[in-house]
Image (cartoon, rainbow, N blue to C red):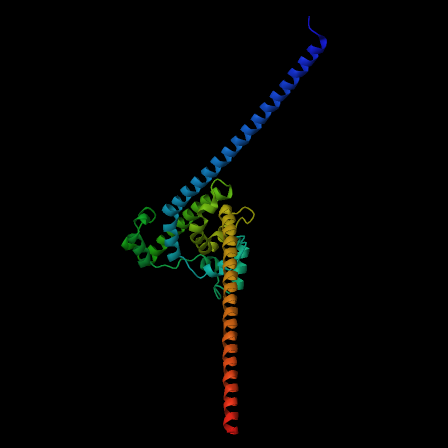
Length: 287
């Protein structure tokens, strides 16, 4: 009833249509997958930005006030020494090299005590506790009968506990950025100065913690983020200094050029005046 050629052509036609349909479905699947991937990437970026904003708020509420207190009570002599160095390892051997290079604590027998000493007296402790009510949850003020020296010792011990708490919070803060849970560039400009200066002040405290186990360090995420932000900060400072130098050179060259133009103009005027004066003298002589 059917012609064999017609059946073959019909079968070929359906094969082509089927192939085109399969190709079309494949294209649709690829496009859908790409759109899903793009949406997932966009959502992940949004989530990382939101997480960074949450961490910035956490930093503001839980860390900044502690850094203000620690900055006031901790010895500041080491901050400038640490700020000059790059790619710190935070080991005690490195700390001793810094002590030797910078000639810190000369004549002192116990470097550990000197490097982690608190520059504070009882009156300052009591002022801080009275001024910042958040310290009420940190410090237990010793009874007056304990004596000044005993009271200071007790408050120094509690300050060390506060420093440990602060470092643990900075470690958790850093971990979120190192593992790309949050977008660190979102908060860098606002927080990097406080973060870097706090770590620099507490450098010897961290290094002393790592003395007993240099191969299994404490606060490794804090160290990674510190070195990353420090390198970025140094680079930006270099770029700023280079740009300022270029601007100063341009200004200097422009001033030199302006001075040359003015000097040449003055010389030209003086020559013309002299020439005019010479002509006038010559005429007077002839007359």
